[in-house]
Image (tube, rainbow, N blue to C red; front, side, top):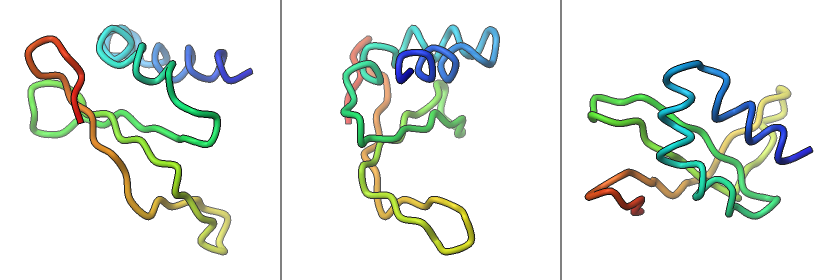
Length: 80
């Protein structure tokens, strides 16, 4: 099931999804079961990967993160 979610999450956006999978697929594939991620577009030239295991329910049915690690591609290597 987790693999299906990973594949959908990385590929759901067509061309951007393919780019995200090429950049962060290996990193996301190595996450623990309790780690959640988001790939976001910023003013940077490439999308940024956010990863957290510190999530809580805000009481309104939403999950929120306390903090996250930020991953990005530099010199063909994903770094935090």
